[in-house]
Length: 362
Ligand code: ATP
Image (cartoon, rainbow, N blue to C red):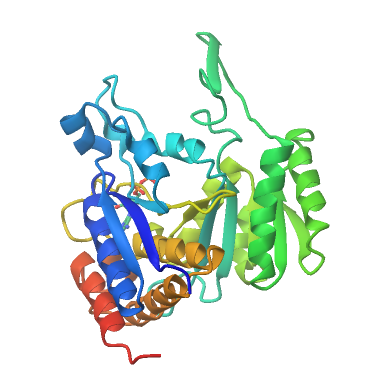
C-alpha cells in the first residue's frame, strides 16, 4: 500500500471562509484519523487578512509553496469588497490558471426535507474553467474586455480546441463512472464558430468513450430543463460562463448555494477544493453559514486524489465523510437554517464529526 500521507494548503478566504474552511479541515481530519490517512494541513494567508498583514491578497511565494503540496482548500473570496489598492487582486482566477485547473466539477444532489425544489436531482456540471468569456483568465496579459470608446465595450470570448477537448475528457471520464450519459450544453445556433468548436471537440473526445451516451442541449433550453426534468441529466459539460450560471441555477433546485460544492482539477495529480458560493458577507460571523458546500468540496478532494493515486485510505476517509454528511443532513437540529434546520455552522460540523467518530469499523 502506498504512503498514506497528503499535504494540503488551507486558505480560508474571506468572510464565512473563516468559519467553513476550519469546519472542513476538522471534518476531513476526523475522517483521515479514522481511516489511517495522515494529512498535513498548511495554513496560508490569503484575501483581505493577507492584504492587511502581507500587503497583498495573494502574498508572494503562495503559488510556489502550494506547488509543492498535493492540493489545497480555498475558501470563498470576497474580492468585491477589497479596497482599490495595488495589492488587492482576486486570487482565485490566478490560481486556476497557474495550476492549469481547467475543469470545475460541480455536483448537484437533492436530499430529503431540506427544502429542495426537486427530490430527484443527481447530476454533475463540468464547467470549463480557464477560457470562455471570463476576462480575468482568458488572456495572458491585459484584459479580455476593453472599451475602444466611451460608448462601446467589447468582451472577448476565447474557445480553443485544446481547452474544449480536455474538459470534455474530464466529463466523459466522470460519466463513465456514473450513469454513462454526457450532455453537451452550448449555443452553436448563434455562436457558430465558438460553440461550434466546443461541440466538435466534445464529440471528438467522445469517440474514445463508446460506453458513454452523448447528447446535446442548447443553453437556454437547458436553463428550462434543469427545472423541469433534472432527473434526465447525469454529467453536463459546458463552457465557462454557461457553466457558471447553470451551476447556481442547479444549486437553487437543491437548497441554495450552501449546497453547491466544487473541485477544480487539471491533468495532474493536484486539485483545489472550492465551493461554488461567494464569501456571503451578509451572514459572516453569525454562525449561519452552511458548511456543507465547503466540507463536501474537501471530501471531493480526498476522493479524487485517493482514486487518482490509488490511496485507499483517502477514498475510505472520503466515503466516511459522505455517510456522516448524509446522516447529518437528515437531522433538523444539526443542520443550518438555509436548509430548514435549527442548528448552525458549529452544530452541523460537530454532528458530521460525531458521525465519523462513532461509525462502527467497516
Ligand atoms: P460570488 O459572485 O463571489 O460567487 P455571490 O454574489 O454569488 O458571490 P454569495 O456570497 O455567494 O454571493 O451569497 C449569495 C447569497 O447566498 C447570500 O445571501 C448569502 O448569505 C447566501 N449564501 C452563500 N453561501 C452560503 C452558505 N454557505 N450558507 C448559507 N448561505 C449562503
